[in-house]
Length: 324
Image (tube, rainbow, N blue to C red):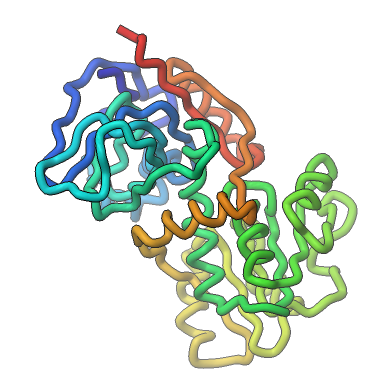
């Protein structure tokens, strides 16, 4: 099978399209023929091995898993003898940030992993980006205790995490202020934002409103700058650990001291979450935003684009199984 392969950490140019053996499903696995996957910030971090703490999971000197890609959509090609919830031919989507492996024509995943059947009516390209950004967004919204009537600000509300957080917070009954640039104001409104702020014209910390939760989905702010936005008991979260890993440290400190809290929750991979996201898509309460499509042969260009930090929502990779 064809796969985007790498054997050393570095820039996108270390990737190459290579023939590798097609995996075989174990007794509890499904083998998925992948038609669409994504490139996201997590992939970029593991490609370069930065921050270096990721190498504790991916390999200290060289990558342990040589095919990236944590999201996928495709068709079940084969199943292990103990698999009961899937059949050959099922259209599925899922997420795996432990072994990665989705930048390839085939991959295996455990039946009990984060994989489920696709929402009705979606193409593979539309289903592939459902899980990653929404998985992170769902985790922080739960950790923050977002509930009906809460006031929530999402800074960077048009990235994969931010656009998902905006929609999920609205589904939870929150009043959402979305922060983005001029070109994306209409998109944020279409995703359900009650108020939009153009950060190129107005600094979001002067929003003039107290929030129960402020999420920086792009990791470009600080608790110190955002603290004044929070109500007593309000919560701040950034998608980035911050300078000298200040956000995890502040999460420990503010858990015991002060009226306003920092959280830095570690995501939990749960099968029920992809099922939940599937249901939200079918209800019309959530849809992943897609910026660009690239074929697998242009995956280097896709990584280069994601690394600019300018993508809107998700970047989708399509796989052609006619490739020799």
